[in-house]
Image 1 (cartoon, rainbow, N blue to C red):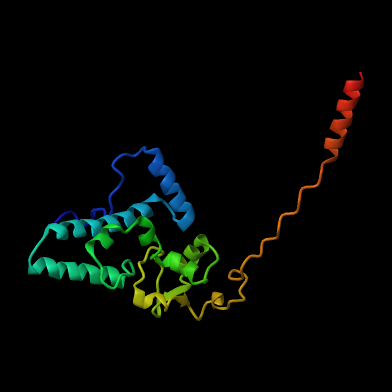
Image 2 (cartoon, one colour):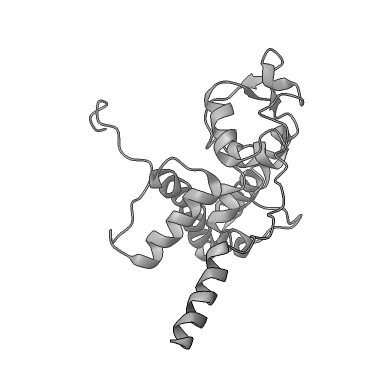
Length: 199
């Protein structure tokens, strides 16, 4: 059973701690999805590996029970939005990527629906109890949103952020960069070179 005061980890860490390619990839994920630390990446990747392990086991399995488990797996992944094929196959489960899982997180969908300007801002809105899903407040950015609840994602009515004119929700209009004017030192440098040539 184990010690209830020391619950087991629900995710797997990398086999090797120092792999340059993996570290660089994790750094990109943290920046792209506004994550707090690498543990969030490992949790989502462990979820993806769990689905893949179930699919690999069911490929070799036969019988009525195996078919029931296949349909239950397809039904669950379709409900969570990971599978869009109306006739899913186990190969579709094996082809799931980490990006597919990350895009189904509440934090990503808040940005996708235009409720926040950036991933970091979406995380702040969620943790500060400004976001509701299906009428219930959710404070977990990593919550995997089912397809049936995706349209119900919104800002809570009692929050000042519910107004699209709120300063934090107005899109930032970045000004075009003006061409850099020529520095006066450049002209002087040219004159100095001419004077040096004359000498």
